[in-house]
Amino acid sequence: MLIAGVLLAVCVLILYGLPVAVTLGAVAAVLMWATTGPDLLVILIQRMYAATTSFPLLAVPFFVLAGNLMNTGGMTERIFAVAHLMVGRIRGGLGHVNVLASMLFAGMSGSAVADAAGLGVVEVRAMTKAGYSARFAATITAVSSTIGPIIPPSIPFVIYGSLANVSVGALFLAGLVPGILMGVALMAIIAVVARRRNLPVAEGRPPLPESWAILRAALPALAMPPLVLGGIFGGIVTPTEAAVVAAGYAFLLGFLFYRELKLSDLPEILWQSGRQTAQVMLIIAAAAPFGWVLIQQEIPNAVMAALFALSTEPWVILLIINVVLLVLGMFIEGIAILIIAFPVLLPVMTQLGVDPVHFGVVVVLNIMIGLVTPPVGMCLYVVSEVGKVPINEIIAEMWPYVLALIGVLLLVTYIPALSLWLPQTLGYGLVR
Image (cartoon, rainbow, N blue to C red; front, side, top):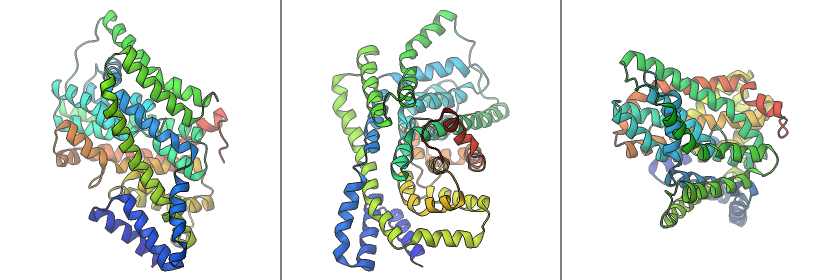
């Protein structure tokens, strides 16, 4: 009964429009007062402060800043141009370009919203100019943006690693194969749709000098993933330090090399980055006492008992958890789900013998799908705004692609090697 009451209170308050951070903090305070009395309310502040002092979380503001600098500094257009050079000459090619550009951008920003807001403008404009419907262009832009936090680096992986005390480097490696699978699945659906709708075919490949000029212009931008990830996996920098490197590199590239980033742009970029970081960190701070109350009231144990009462088969429990996370993703912001689900579900996964790195990939993949499922899917609203397409048209178009992403989710859930093979092969971190 307590579990149902807590979840119902959280969902009702969020759907009513109360900010996620305020909701979690308020529910935690009420539970503390009701179960332990007012004397222990001091723990609320202590937990909120302690949750934000984790060293890995310092990566969050710098990855956010790096994404904003790239969107302003001319890197997104050049990434799109290279993707067009690679896969733009087939039927429905700009749909494939959209997905490939998101995969390349994913290796730099670690944010789905940065992808949707930055690349989205370039992608929708290019596709509509080439004869694609704005509805189709916006849909592909929205669903492809979900790849961003799966292919490393990834802000959600940083947060999960901090919460679960799991190697962030191992999580980054674990997301690479699933992220590629997401891109392949989306491209497969685009190929089918392109044949059925007779979508446009781009003109022939440009002359070699022009192709080389496009590639040469984008090479400095494309060097960021090897620079950032190579530094992490080579043991040169930590993920937090790599985020600082990414932000610094994006600034130098946009300001000195491409010269599209002006000093006058910095105040707005810093303000937007600070605001976005504050939103994430406030949720993390408020969720800490919420998680403490859940554990103190033994709610994770009750959830574990309820799940094992339904079935003792691991595959059934994993399926139930995926369904629950997908449904929550339709109503609650992704970072909030990650933080709420962690203290409740990780003990269940431990009991089942599921590797915490593997579980982290499954959870993050779930919440990425939630970014494009109504009514709260954030990427839907971002793409609707930048593409000037009514959100109901995107929703009507997107379901085959969402089903493809769910198919990848099931593969990753039931074939742990898809996420664990690379970390184990490279011997990075302690993967249990």
